[in-house]
Image (cartoon, rainbow, N blue to C red; front, top):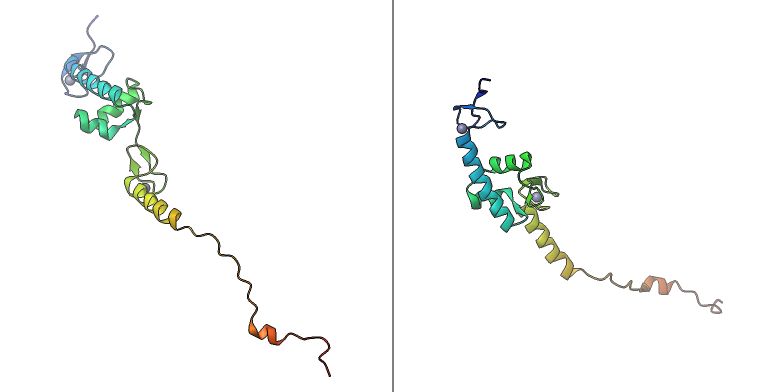
Length: 139
Ligand SMILES: [Zn+2]
Ligand SMILES: [Zn+2]
């Protein structure tokens, strides 16, 4: 049976297909990168893709691919998500940096200065007093 020759999806080299669409050379490189990423994620659970990419030097796309392939467990690595407040794409968490700062500032300014509702002051206007009719004073 003739070998199933294909072009590597990364380097374009002709190689004999063995279940993955990259050649053995690129697969080896990918495995190296995967090992680095896996190692980092193991030591830094919950790290964002951007952070892992920056620390390991592996492309974010590559890391995403590891996640999509199921080689990395997404629980240990947070997917890119959207800020719950402004919808900006963020690497992880609920809010983007700007909104976090905004929310933090709001919390700081709102909570300590929050005033108790002022007691309702019952003041009788002078005009009302004048209108008072005392009984028995009528002529
Ligand atoms: Zn290749
Ligand atoms: Zn935001």
